[in-house]
Length: 121
Image 1 (cartoon, one colour):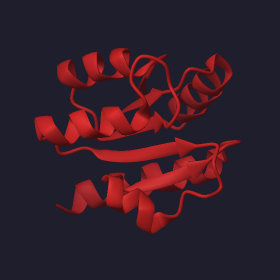
Image 2 (tube, one colour):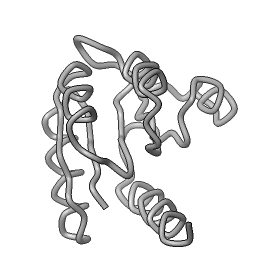
Image 3 (tube, helix red, strand yellow):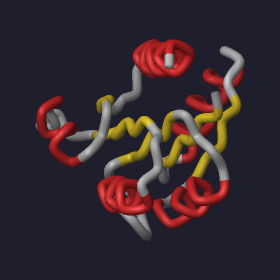
Image 4 (cartoon, helix red, strand yellow):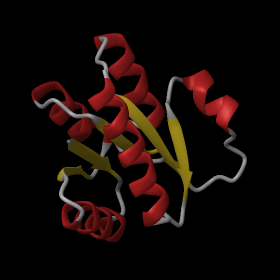
């Protein structure tokens, strides 16, 4: 499964990418929302992890563009705000959310969940 991780924090990008690649996944990274949209338009991703607060376009703006394009991709919002709740995440159009600091095991559980769902379809 190809995965995109978009975050303006280089350390978050690198350790998330390294971790997921060691688990056998193909991972691309983007440092801002505009770069994320460019990659999303040219490659087929199973899951996109988006930092809520990025330069150029926020994670929520990227979600809006993904929905407008009509892509069938699982979207996970990465947030530093504890106030984000699952019902709010669904309201804005994301499938899951994770809070910073990122728990890599939670990321892996999300990836495996959607990988298994795509195998069943």
